[in-house]
Image (cartoon, rainbow, N blue to C red; front, side):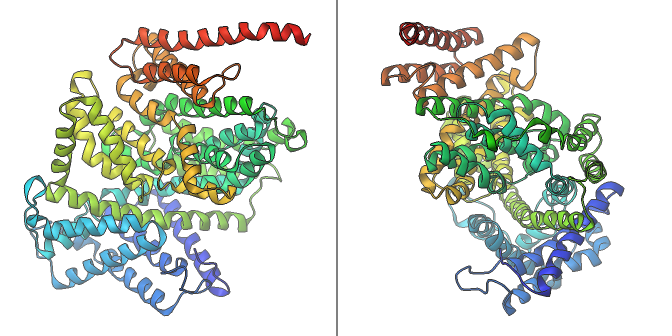
Amino acid sequence: MRQLSGPLRWVCWAWAAAAAAVHLYFGGTGFPEPIQMRGFHLLVFTPLLFLLYPAFPARSPRHRPSWPDWAWAAASAVPHGWVMWNWMSVADRMEYVDPFTPLMMVLGITAIVTLLEAIRRAVEPGLAWMVAGSLAYMQWGYLIPGVLNARPFSPAEIVEASWLVPTAGGIYGPLTGIVATTIAVFILFGSFMQGSGTGRLFSNLGAAVAGRYTGGPAKVAVVTSGLFGTMSGSSVSNVITTGAMTIPLMVRVGYRPAVAGGIESAASVGGALMPPVMGAAAFVMAEITNIPYGEIVVAAAVGAVLYYFAILSAVHFEAKRLGLSAMPLKDIPAWREVLADAHLVLPIAVLVWLMMERWSGNFAAFCATVAMVLVAMLRRRSRMSPFAILDSLAQAGLTMAPLAVSIAGAGIVVSALTATGMVVAFGGIIKGLAGGNLGMLLVLLALTVLVLGLGIPTTPSYIIAAAIGVPQVLELGRGLGVDMLQAHLFTFYFAVIADATPPVAAAAFAAAAIAKSSPTITSIHATRFGIAGFTVGFAFIYDPGIMLRGGLFDILMATGIQLAALTLITSAYAGFLLAPMGVLLRIALGAAGLMAAFGHVLDDTTRFLLGAGALAGVAAWQWAMARPKRGEAR
């Protein structure tokens, strides 16, 4: 992003703040007609990106927009302004029946081209190429033989499907709608949490809870990143916010830089899995599935805890093996320092209560945001000045802008996949490769999501993979009773952890920059610390007890299996349980953990006994072997 200077800096800051304030107002009072709201959302955010992000970082001006940037910004505003001005005729027209005029054609092409350029600059070039490839497939897919063959589309049909079909997909489709309404207000809530000092509360709480134990800085990173995940919609911003403090601390007490970066990136990625917010993709999931957001949060809660349990276990075993110390006492805040900000938890409680009471997400987030400002006024240290309030609005606007264009781009991809029948074709390919086996289908879908995550942010990656794979999972999983929520949570988990898996891992690369380590090595460590993302993802399908389904025994058994399996796996690759382990014992423990996690051919009781028995047996053996040494030490 450019570092603007002079009056333009304040103009863009005020622009972002005003745009966010309007979204917040609508979140509490009700939104305009869908096409109006979506047009306004893209009108206020797309032009801003051309002023803030240079076309070519190495050659473009770093402190001011060039005249082509101004031209791009003006061009990007025209089609969205036209839609807002003519919203009634756009809303009333019959898609693919009413004439698509030459003016609409020009405006549609302008909207698509400027959107592609905004995505390339501000989000990921890979996503821009995927959107362009989807459009190219609509144009020339009829030339491809075999299962990928598509019917011919005229240029007018391509542009209309990508731009002006608000009921199905494209730029003004339902995906843009959910971002412009619910997600935008939740981003505002997260921004006000930051501005009020809730981040300080989370940081101090993490240090006070975990800092005194072995490998304290790493455990602080895990706890703090999980807490920050409740208000951050971006794993990268989570890394930057918490990693600036925790990564140097971890390196200082003895962690290698790449390991420190891996711990931080794995913990930060998991923030999107942590209720009550869970990032933008969870709201998209609620929109796609028509499942209440509160139900999604409840189903995902145990899985999120398991994810962070695995990271904490891995960090603990790694610290024990290396003989690392706790945080220096001078760096650990006193509990009175933590409790001084405890009142800032109240708005989060308001949010959770309203969501559980089935209020709409946007209204719940609006009330929680207002409550955050009011509650922050209770103490001087958290009180928000007028400038701080405006800055929180501006920061929210700057976060919304790239998300707006990335989701609009994903809408084009989904529209193309649907119109061409590519969803059915690609799903058929995956299903054919799986040979009717649900387990193989899940592996292929997981790999597909991880590949999509190479150059696409979490939410678009999840949207595209869900469109391709979820119907196949539901079809093959019918015998096991797999339902919509299980299939979507499986896809969601792999879309999230793609940010930390090599070869391209945005969160790990950001952590590597702070740690001054190799991005590839850092992402490898992030993958091993985030191993629970893989086991929990499959558990949503095979062990629905972790979604709090079934009786108490089913829930405890499913959770116990995962706890035992994750402890075995993390201790195996760390080489330490109660004492250092040799290669053969590590292999045996790792195999037992993998069998407990993925051995679904066995019944649940056998899997639990295998995992818990292996864990207890090795722990008892190491404890017994250490008794003579303890006696000698006395």
